Image 1 (cartoon, rainbow, N blue to C red):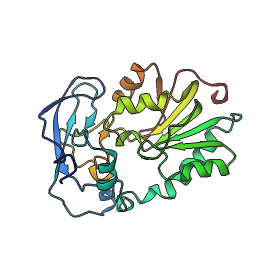
Image 2 (image 1 turned 60 degrees about the vertical axis):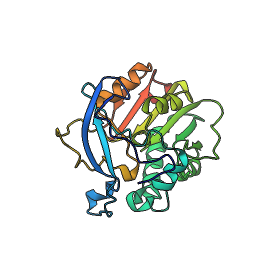
Image 3 (image 1 turned 180 degrees about the horizontal axis):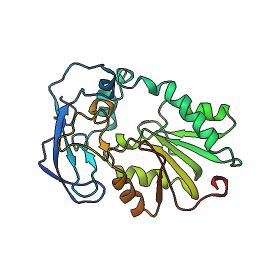
Length: 250
């Protein structure tokens, strides 16, 4: 694939982990068009463009450097384009509806909580939160015309966001800077703690979806712990980070 900045990215045999800075050798390679829909038996034609991933020896983070130097315009052209719905049909309606219902129940003990959906995409989730009576706001860093929100928030959600960033530490820091000292950061990303030595068949490793950084529980704990946050795992996909329990959560 040819982009404005050249090829999709050079092959680097040994990298350093983007979270703990420990050695991360090559883990495997897949075609650019590998998508999450393959788990449902839907396959896109191969592009012939290889995307190489690394895996950290220490915390288990799996990541690619192929997109490290892409501009927002390149992401919008090659990944988040009109065909994105083919590789993630749930993001339009079903996922926002389910997540909004979960959030409204999760924050029901709170009063006038200021809520932000970080990486809010088309804003559907935030609209549903407002319909449910919440003070909902949305911001997506990929929106070229979007302006970062003002002030801090009591609750920040980030559903299926962190796997899309080539800079996990910077992205998490950006989100947490918007969080109140006693706020809650609730996010989803599938942790893949148990992978084979050559586990590139894992459905979540999907460059066409923009899945650039894949986490283990240890890598998440390392990242958030280094920023002064403790983390709670509800399951392999849903997680919460906070410093102190707010009164409405107890």
